[in-house]
Image (cartoon, rainbow, N blue to C red; front, side, top):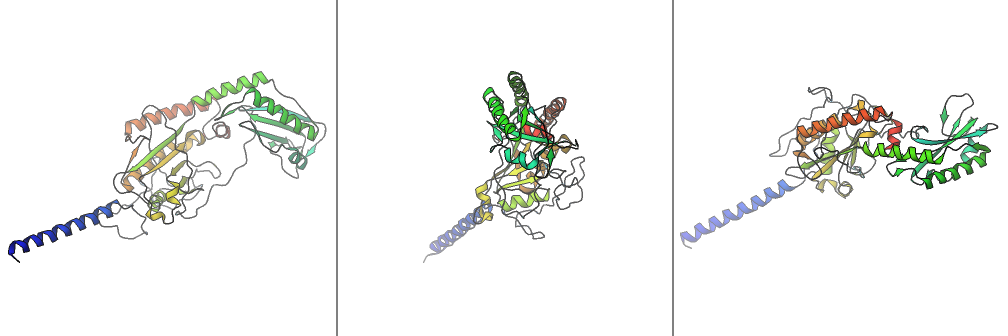
Length: 383
């Protein structure tokens, strides 16, 4: 074999080795990032990231502590996404994360009481006290009138308060009500008539005399309330997109947990709990439920996650939008991502400042209407 042939063979071998090495490198870079055990060394080419706990009221990082549901000092987060000049509709969260550890979930709270501000209320007069057991037996099979919630409440003999009927209690007065409006629209004539029929049947069963308000006046009030609600509803959805390598569900959950998120009730969903137990979460982080439920979630590839805020369901004091911004920035830095709107356009600080100003005006308008964000009335109206 001539020296030329030997040289070409050597060069060919080197080229082949280089191609194999390059393909291996590309495969490694494109594989989804996975969660690491605490204290494990970072993968080659990946710098180790120390995650600070965010303080929503200051710039200095606070001492990191494990997230505790309902703890007002739990770490805050931030995420960001919106179209300039308008509030984006948040992507609905329909997924929890099986890979995340089982963590406490906020307790379920009783349904809010009827309120003349957002309900049609019909008093039901009683000649004698009636037991809670009799009231429960007489309640209609369905607690809805069209698309609106229907409810009955009783007034206790000691005059303490109106409450949902319960066994063993006695009531000296009852009232039935139906909600004036919700996200399905305003109460209409047909729904009001259905309410009258349902309440009358209940009253007959317990021996009560109903006093129904004027239908025209209540339907007009429902339309006015619906018009206000339609102009002041706000749901923010912010998207965090991977710059290069995709993420595994475990990788996302690991970084989200460091800033206070806990596992939600559904696959692909994590929540940042409110400072008071039993209230809706301040923020929701969601991603592909199919990836979370895969046989091996760590082999699933995620290229985006969504952080969302139900503005009208979270009290102003929670500073939800500030925490949303901080969480978005923290996750973007930790996971090598970028915060964008739902079309993929990166969001600037100026855009977020404008959104924050719009939200402050929204909070003021809700307060002026006695429908403050996070109140039971607001949560019912905007549902």
